[in-house]
Image (cartoon, rainbow, N blue to C red; front, top):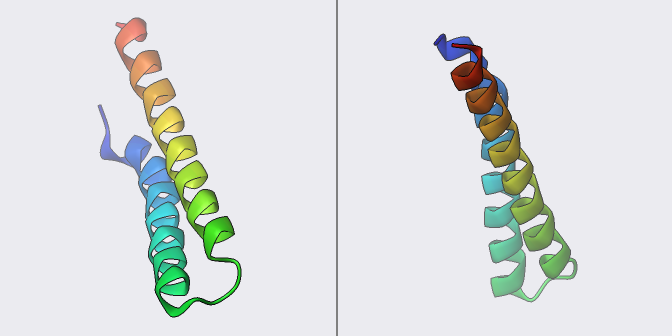
Length: 63
């Protein structure tokens, strides 16, 4: 298995983490749009994990 296959899910996951950190900062500072940022971050992380699972399933069923 090549490491190049994991770059896309990793980049997507990092964006999700960034949105979660920004959402937490907004929540602490009582700025608007904090819940939306937190929700968006979690959804992006879920999408990245789904993409990772699809890549792994394709790899293991190909053998």
